[in-house]
Image 1: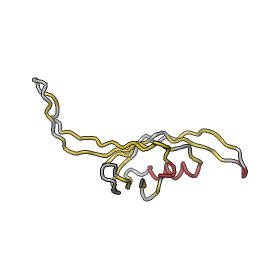
Image 2 (image 1 turned 135 degrees about the horizontal axis):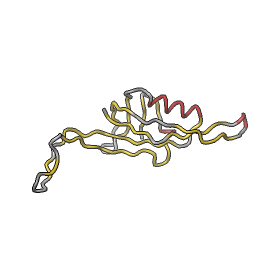
Image 3 (image 1 turned 90 degrees about the horizontal axis):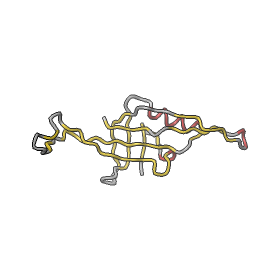
Image 4 (image 1 turned 135 degrees about the vertical axis):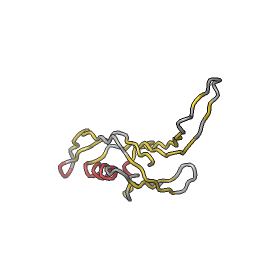
Amino acid sequence: MIFTINGVDITPFIAFGGLQYSLNDVDAPNTGRSMDATMHRARVASKVRWDVTCRPLKTDEVQTVLNAIEPEWVTVMYTNPMTGYAITKTMYSNNRKAKFMMHRNGANGGYDLWQIDAFPLIER
């Protein structure tokens, strides 16, 4: 599986089962049901969306992920589940949230753990 954002490989940060792919149709404005209940549809395009959930992350890891998805537009390369081949798309993310979970004591003074809320990557 390939999953990079602006060249940053984020696969080590993804939770088990933390990638959800969807292909969403964009319909023309006249799409809908007529008075006889027949569905009339005009698909204009299909757009990819990934919902990404990360495992608990150390401070340097959370910085890597948040900085990768911060730009208005990002380049995402991933293994296309429909073909098995790598594909690159321009996408955006929104609603980026991270919460402090806990400080873990350890050898070298310990470390902080963070959780990033699941975030979308939506095709332009």
